[in-house]
Amino acid sequence: MSLQGKKRSRATLADKERPAAKFAKGKIQEEEELMMPAAKERSSKPVGSSTGKATKKTACPSAQGSKQAYSHWLMKSEPESRFEKGADVKFGIEDLKAQPNQTACWDGVRNYQARNFMRDMKVGQEAFFYHSNCKEPGIAGIIKIVKEAYPDHTQFDKKDPHYDSSSTKENPKWSMVDVQFVRMTKRFIPLSELKAHYQAHRASGGPLKDMTLFTRQRLSVQPLTDEEFEFVLSLEEKPS
Image (cartoon, rainbow, N blue to C red; front, side, top):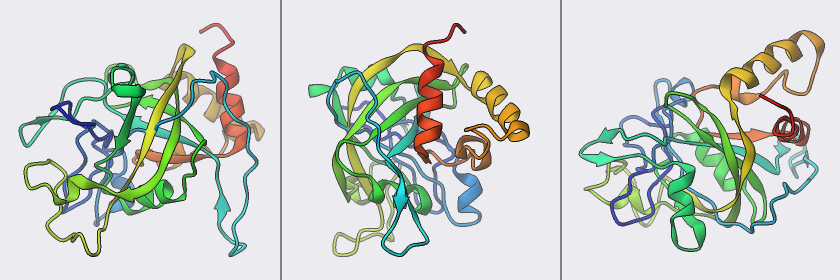
């Protein structure tokens, strides 16, 4: 997502979809794995309250009985400048904090699975703001969903890096949510630390054994189980 006088998208390099372009707010294109050969995507921001505490919600089966309903998420965005079709897709957590009411739309996602995850999001749910495609990737803070999925305006903007000529206003393909800054994590939680826990938990059966961050790295919008969210949140209390 870029910062050109509008709320930029959070799509990362992995998020891009082909042939469509990704959203402007720097989401890591870590979604390529899903889009092969289809598309990649990027994401935007959510709006939320600054309670400073992650809400605890229990995941439950959906009405269909086969799909799990999630209440926590991990959303990737690029904190360092990277130009795409002349637009800087940079959008870190400090950029979100600088927005009016510390709120922005999470636009530019161009991966179908990531888009569908955003369509599942509910107001009040929390997500980790993950810095991606940068020198030190990892979790920088917590954000909150303040507006549920609605059409992503960047898909119709021919000047936007994430313009999709195949999408129409009558039948839009791409959605976004609004997010709001809640708080910074007490310390930055780097990818290397999360990976060490993931590898240990794969062997021991710990809470991160199936974490999407490592099983579907390319996704810029990822679901978290309650157990995963609470474990990662507990890491901020431990010394690095």
